[in-house]
Image 1: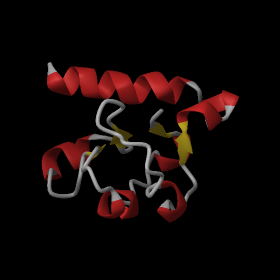
Image 2 (image 1 turned 90 degrees about the vertical axis):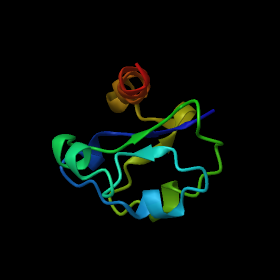
Image 3 (image 1 turned 30 degrees about the vertical axis):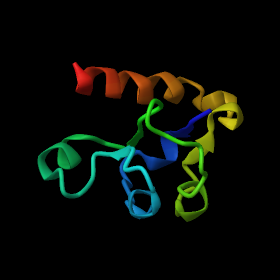
Image 4 (image 1 turned 180 degrees about the vertical axis):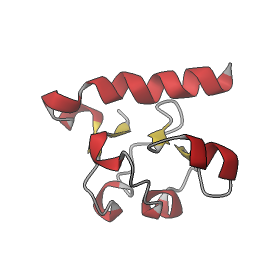
Amino acid sequence: MTYIIAEPCIGVKDTACVDVCPVDCIHPTKNEAEEFEKENKLYIDPEECIDCGACEPVCPVEAIFEEAAVPDKWKQFIQIDADWYKKKKG
């Protein structure tokens, strides 16, 4: 199972989650300046996420959920995160 970043992240892009991720699966980071500026939220790579949960408690806007616990109103973000990485990996 993976974690998902949902709607509360839009426009916020707080990177506390990036700092605690042990496998570097949350992007874009501030080091990816051009892409970071272009995107309106952060994304978790569903293939790289190890389901450790380190990101969830540090999110100041409570935008991160375990995939099975994503509220119904934000279920579309499961696919949004997956599609972002598919596009990025080409």
